Image 1 (cartoon, helix red, strand yellow):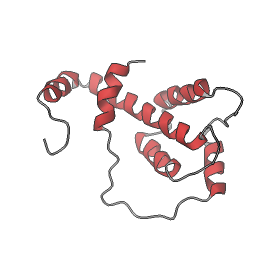
Image 2: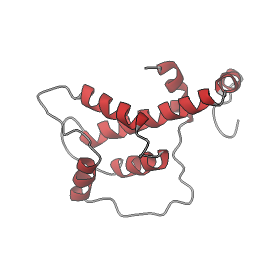
Image 3: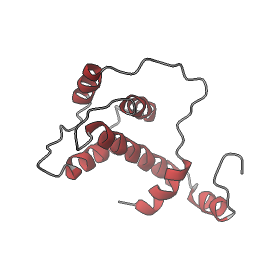
Amino acid sequence: MKARFLLPLLFLFVIPTTGQVEHAPPTPEQCKADADAWGIPTPNVFAANEDQFSNLANAMMRDRNVTAKMLDARNTELGQCVDGLPSGRYAQAHRAYTIAELARMANFMRRHNLMQQFYDEDAQGKRLRED
């Protein structure tokens, strides 16, 4: 995977917090139902799940029916879900969705010829919105 494009974007990825309405955390039943509906793999404590979650990230990178805002909303919910399993189904899915969104951002930057601007500003030490 093009990690060299994704790593710098990780530092730019900020979920907007202004203007958000506070909601009650999802119930365990809602978390499980949504995870099942979204095709999040059910972990197997006896086998590695990395391939399943890598496949989920790849699928979300290409899924034209799931928008970046939907990925954000799912990540917000998954960040509030606790499953208590050693594999961390929701944490792994949260990671997969974040990777997918970062890959989409990197592709956007390449399509719009913004990579050089990113590299130039990064070399100048511009890391945050205030810089």
